[in-house]
Amino acid sequence: VQLQASGGGSVQAGGSLRLSCKVSGRTYTIYSIGWFRQAPGGARESVATIAWKGINPNYADSVKGRFTISRDIAGNTVDLQMNDLRPEDTAIYYCARRGSSHSRYGDWGPGTQVTVSS
Image (cartoon, rainbow, N blue to C red; front, side, top):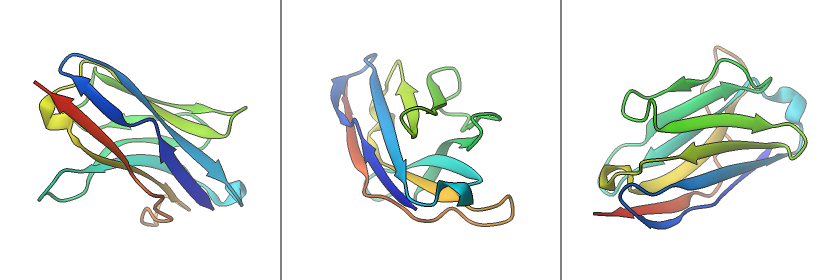
């Protein structure tokens, strides 16, 4: 499975961005897709996850009510709509897949930079 994140950029606080994770390859091996982020000097953290069927979204407390994860079945993408962005959302955002409920996220694609200025 190959994952390619795109859609990052620079915005001012309060602005919006939409990230897209293009998925290709053996998609039948996917259990769920997650968006993660890593700020400079920080650890990678989970932002949002969704089952490959497009159900059961989960969010980090820090983004609940501002971010929405969804699956575009036709385009084979998992998108992350980010509204009301804050400077603390600045990070490199990655998407990854999990093969089962018991496995770790892997197949990390190249990240996309999100920068939010105050």
